Length: 331
Image (cartoon, rainbow, N blue to C red; front, side, top):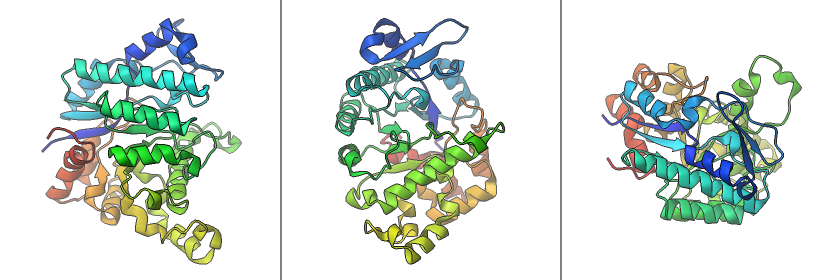
């Protein structure tokens, strides 16, 4: 049984070196004043010190080996996506990250795959970068923040990017980071516990009700954290569609009819929730994800799949077969 983890984060040291040597070109500075580097992206506040595994590929590989995971699909660090940069700087920073990721993965044998970051502040440049990343660098898709500088993801200005992703058969993983300030998140980490699944739900709702999934029927979208709140409150979406004209304004069909247009990772960390998700959307739409190396990741990602009461065929699909198919990996 092949195991593939599709939800990890890695920032290649090569990208860090590009920022150290050409900060004006990429719009990013590296602060090497402590044990671990921090990044200053444009005029944004410095990031927190980077966790060592984020830029140390052997630490990731050790985790994968310990969990019996043969391959992984590495995504970028969304904290440093750089959407606030001027478009050309954003494009240069995306290229530095994508070239670095591709080179780092190639250096360890080519078993693993990567997801590009793109300058979403310019959908045309984002589409161009995705084409380069997939056709020239060998990356398999993209990871983007659901908060596209305050624009809903169904905004038609973003269609050039979605069109490119559909034409390239390049899955797009939605991974939240940017949040509006909410005082009531308070001091109990609720920005992550509630805010991030909320952002995923908001983005998925936008793609459904705003017509993006209808305009690009070949588009593959991956929702992390088990799809946020969408699978568990889809009935509310359906009710809204039935009784509120605003929900039908862009011609969307019944929201629950789009559930299988998405893929979902396993990061719900509660076996009954995973069992429900699989029963709702089908085992062929669910992918193993750990979110390594972050605190709210799953340190034993395959365990929940084996504890959710699923059939052997469903487990095989979720643990690796789906990822091989969706991300065009070598079996």
